[in-house]
Image 1 (cartoon, one colour):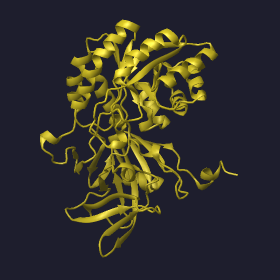
Image 2 (cartoon, helix red, strand yellow):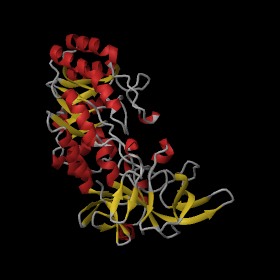
Image 3 (cartoon, helix red, strand yellow):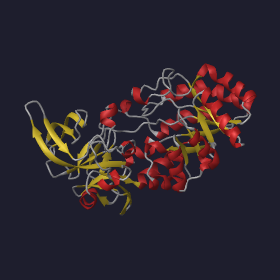
Image 4 (cartoon, helix red, strand yellow):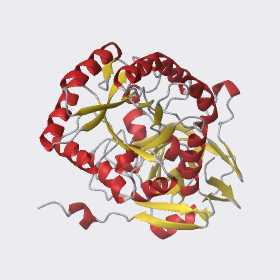
Length: 428
């Protein structure tokens, strides 16, 4: 599900009119649906209900404190990639004992902080990191829980910038070297507790096949490590894709953009039916690390059309949001549907939707047929709940947008719009 639909000619988030939010809070403006976030978390949790498991939300997808608090109250664990994300989780009421710390470049300060807070496990990306973790833990007089990230060399068939499971990627340890590393660690690293095994092959996967291939390849390894070293969990990563190409209809959502059944992306029910039988008899706790799946389709970015520029080659719709607010299209050709807040008629116009940033890469779509919205009208960039605000910047000295969380009939500001004074506050 998602919480966005046209009602009486206007686009709503749950029961709140998006145009009223834009009028009240200005644009650019991020808006999230609380009930969509909870629905996606609950569906994923239910898909693994037959096994010992924990859904550890990937904080990097959307790290707003209110979003984290919503999931913490629901019982989620958290997958973090920095000391700052751990700090956010704690401030939002999350339990460090249900946090796993991933990432290839953990600093000493981050390691010390995570050890002091009592996180569940470090997901270690190299032997060098594991030895450094042992050194820091020894100097602090504690035992560091760790899992090594195995790189199964499985092609996720996703964009090269978000593929993480092949041997040429920077993440993890080669599959063939894992057993020797666990053996050395068990003998030599006295301040490490080998608590688990971790893997992650990439993001935005819309077929179950790469997941199945990776799980089948790594499951025997996980079993052997459990028998030999007593590991207690296996994190099978995240990466479940979402639908970015959608069509909104009055009172309903056509999520599949009129595609044939064979082209429809992976559903969470298909994922569970395919993966659970492969892992249910291992006797290991299974961790799942979704981010985009939970929040991606729960958010939109609202932006106002400033001008229409008609050239000899193209027509440009110039809006007040830029690549600094939502970088996915510029960074890795991410697709976002663009829909007016007023329900459109059938008239379409081929346009580029571009922002005010002084870069040719500052666009949200190119040569796309869209409803012919006019200057002064507000449009929504759909599926912007993941890797949207968290990747925003102040490029061109532009203040960061506000964020709004909608829950049924109500809405609240969960991040104030940054002012110019806020933007300059740390400078001398």
